[in-house]
Image 1 (spheres, rainbow, N blue to C red):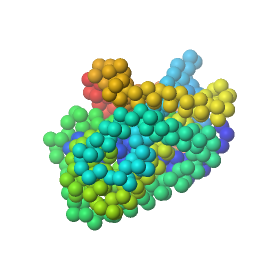
Image 2 (spheres, one colour):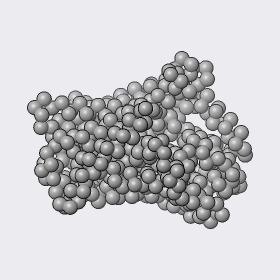
Image 3 (cartoon, one colour):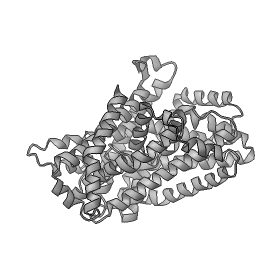
Image 4 (tube, rainbow, N blue to C red):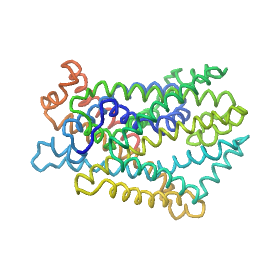
Length: 442
């Protein structure tokens, strides 16, 4: 297996994979378009129940076998034909997501080094900048290349020298930056309005769409169904307390999501921007808000985008690692060659997606009213990630014998906690995930 995470390194790596654009970019805009409180409270409930149960199941699968995703299923499969090894198909989801996730993170880098020093003064000007960014194939390709180069360099260095050292530095910096920005937001008059928007519960807002969005956010925020948690747990100590690790990761992820939401909505309300801007909340509304802050707006913009970039890079590393581990173990290729081969392939596909956003080429790369970029985003979040998550909880909850599962988890789950987790995993999780997933597909 090569090198392993230390106990702290594993928690920070799992946290790094979870805390990314999903928490800081996706959570606030999903909260905005979903009306606030109902979405937030449902997200909290699902994270602490279904999300935590699936997170433990994925980590236990990796820790108990110390194998890559495909081999982990194969080793625990009691069927002689070992058909569950095909659940390893979830390995393709990381590279697929990277093709568009890397592009979005490239936008963040561009805004960090360029737009922060020339902030727009109106929504119209900000929308024009974002439109120009989307229509610049060269600019987006450079951004994607930069993200993938940094990601490839870190992954190629391995678990200990690359991934663990990255998270030991960036995770504390990320939390320090965000709490600093939160304290600044708390000094503003609109902080109370942002607080009520996020936590005031209105039963009428509990629609099937909000349920669907909330569950999707849980999958994103805990990196479920991607093979990441299985892969990281496979290179940690077999005595690692996975319950404590889960508590740390789930609660820290919730905390950073709430901090990001409170901070962003305070800024948005303070300067009269649109909370339901959707995906453009970060790239169109916030730059105007920062611009209206005066001289301090430049500093706030830089700190915010820097924290977003930190979070994004820890996630891109996590998205690439499972496929790299599988290929190096399965075919005995060198980590260096596998990493850079995958990076090259992801870059080529990513550039095609960039073309699908351009007005001159999008008609050729649009199918059933969705661009290729949007289709990959939809397929990964709506189909691949839920299927990967379902494969894990069905395998762990229904295929493995209960006594086997109890034995594997005995070092961190007592009898009562095991009974609670097993009930959630076997009955509640499938019921919620299947119903919401079918609703989303429909």
